[in-house]
Each structure stands twice: as C-alpha cells, then as structure tokens.
Length: 103
Length: 170
Image (cartoon, rainbow over all chains, first blue to last red; front, side, top):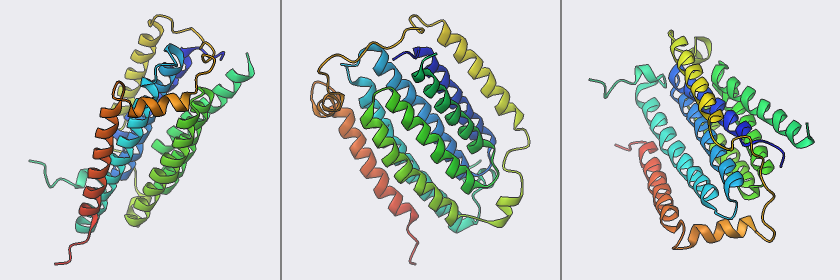
C-alpha cells in the first residue's frame, strides 16, 4: 500500500465537485439524479479510504458505505418513479418546467 | 513510482474523465453509459483499498441495478427535442465557478490535515474483513440499528416508488 491517503481525498473532492457542477447546471431531472450518484460515490470513496488508513479492524467506514449504497438505491428508485410520473402527466423532464409546487 | 500508484492514477483519471463526460455529454443515454464507466473505476479503487466486498457490491448494485434503472428511465422519458437543444442552463458558469471554488477549498483543507501523506499499514494478520463487516452489521454493539433503519428505508422507498409510478386506472 504505497498510495498516500491524500490522493484518495483529492480524487473524492474532485468527483464531488464534478457532481455538484452537474447537479447545479444540468436541465434534465434524470441528469441531475445521475450527478447525485457521482456525489454519493465520492462520499463512499472517502469512507472506504478512511476505513483502510485509520483502523481496518474497526468496520465503521465499510458499514456506513454499505448504508450509503442502500440509501442511493432508495433515492434512485423514488426519484425515477417521481420523474416518470411527472413525465406521464406533463410530458417534460426539464427541472425548470416542473414548477407545480413553486409559489 | 510503484505499480500500485500507476494503477491508482490510471483508474483515478478514468473515474474523473468519465464523470466529466457524464456532466457535459449531450445525449442522456451516453451520460448513463459514462456513469457505468465511472462506477466501474470506483469499484477498482475499492479493490485497491482491499474492500473486496464493496467492490463486488459496487458492480452488482450500482452498475447492475442503479445504472440499468437509469437507462430504463432515460428510454421511458426520451423526447426528440431534449436531444437537440442545450442540456445546461444559460448561466452554467456560476456552478462551474462554485465547483472550482469548493474544490480549491477542499484541497487546501486536505493538505492541512494531519498524517495526510501517510501510506496504509498492511491489514492486521488474521483479519477477515468480510467476516468483520458481517458481524459489525448485525451486532448490537455495532451497527445493527443503522442497518435495520436502512432496510426499512429501502422497503418504504420501493413501496413508495411502485405507488408513485403506477398508472391511475380511473
């Protein structure tokens, strides 16, 4: 294991920022969900890297990475169901045009 | 530079380039496929970190389930006009500046961290990480409560997803 911890942290930070840019700049609601997946993956890289570099006998990092997997799957299932439902009614997936709840 | 570092750099570059493609590519189906490449790169990073179980779960759950779900959703909501026009907002440079700003801040913060240049010690002899993870997830002293909460969340989310996506039969 000859890789410094900083490399993983910088990679995760870059991945998170790419995802953040995508969430804020893309119009399509499905593309926004794709970018949220990138951000969740950045978090998972950090969790696993800290598990490996701090105390591998303590499984906190991996356990919470597993929970992040479950939360990501739940988020995608609900998000895509909502998008498909909105698409059926309003024939659009552009986030700006879905303004039913905007006041 | 050791072989391990070269492999890490190659796959880190793969992850970042394909993540950028997810963000900038116009065709949403291609974006979903680039996401698969990026997720695969992350799975390789887990393998380098000796988190074997997570590497497998990454391939099975993320690539096998989540990415496929995305591809189905893209195909169900496709519209010709969406493929032609711009896919980003007009003021896309504000998020770009924000992202660069946060990245700079994080990198500065990371290098002010103690012990950040350390390399990992070898895994303790006799530690079976898969067994340890399994015990940690069901042991009352460890993470059984978050694990069960995640299970209930998953169940509720899937039931809710089925309910939301069902066509009204009225």
